[in-house]
Image (cartoon, rainbow over all chains, first blue to last red; front, side, top):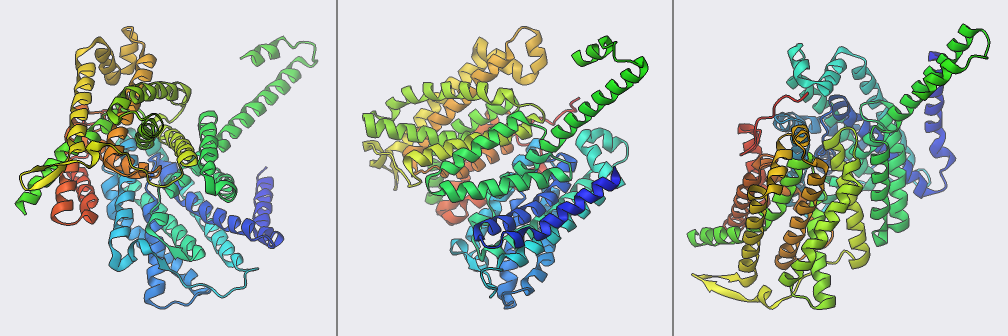
Length: 345
Length: 292
């Protein structure tokens, strides 16, 4: 079983690696793949905090934007030429986001749950305003331009895609490490019952804040990679409520607090959104369609795809095992009464 | 300088009532249904567009149009609650944010489809007319809007604190299970409360549309202001939301006049941060008890 799992994972990785080479002629699809990778990385990072602790942050666009501006401003200040060099600035962007996350997280985490969510929304808008108003640094609503790599259009997307993939693997690694550690158990305990976790000796404040900072690191890098790919940066497109909602939606759609769920969510939501934008962007129809999709998913699968499927799978297997057990007990199959009773449940 | 402060305070008192209307709806919905209605911002804008249509197509006066807008919005609120909010399962508060956001997206898309994203303004004689008051001018509309919010808030307070329905509403707010045990039809109270909240948003929207240019995307600016108001107030506190809206708008207006309009919104965010440091449960909020 475990070997099968590893093989499947390796196969998925292989598909991810060869995917852009296979479809390279169409740029639109390739752009979509890059955005998907970038978002998958971001939502995996986001999930380390919000998924494991159950504190839903709807304000991680703050770190998305801070990472993005770090990228843009350092490129400008140090005259970094376009090419592979700006990729080396990604960790710096993540670290700057972390530096902001410490005080902001301390502040927002003073309140519980829903008040926390609302506070993070408010913080996001503060930073959007700052992005507009600190014209000396951000150039306000006129935006900034990032250095552009001189790669030819056929292979332009590839470096972004593979950097995104590498960072996604890093994020998955960190998420997996956290999930299977004592620290991760503490985070899950906070999600299930914070007061009891505190009573049992989990340092809830420190746990929450550190997870918040870790997730800010990844979301910061997400923002930096995103704007480097885009080439321009404007306050309203990085400190953007849509970014927040996208992260939250992906995680909820796939399964909050699981490792594969958010990635699956990103794989569904990002292409869908990009496609709708491409098809109906001019007429606002894309908003109607995406909203309806969201509504249906949230109401029908409130737990997310991965947990729902896991549940079905588990109950199906339990049922199969039960059938087999009853059969072997009876020796023959001419006594189905017991089985039927269980099926009725 | 000091006259500017006076001017800011007067303007703030006159327009703060509008925010109080919208925020009361939001906080009422939170209190009774335990959901955060992120669609409140776009519902306000929907109210503004309704007034716009009534005025452009049927030449109905803005304030007369309220007689049509408010019942329509109430019905829509009841419908939304029945169709979507009631069906939320699982992590109720967080899911409600996403569900109402999806509703907001759909409404935003519909508005954008029919009215484009261009800014619209409402016209009436009292919108452009001004009266001089001690060295500065006040648009007549601000006084009308102020009166409107006083009347509607008065009705709301009467409804909540002086009627049998209000008693049922407050009981459901305090303890849903206990309320249903003593025979209150809580889900009906919830539907009606959501309707009232949406109707308040619609009424606020007419006032907002009369004093601002609006397009479907204006809802984002509105919803975060409203969210800050209800966090400042302490979530679920009706009186708190009135005081917080007035404080927020007055401070914003004074800063805009004395310093610069660019920074006026930032100031109340700073206030929000200070408040969270000193009093995390909000001005009038109760400390959250342990829930099992």
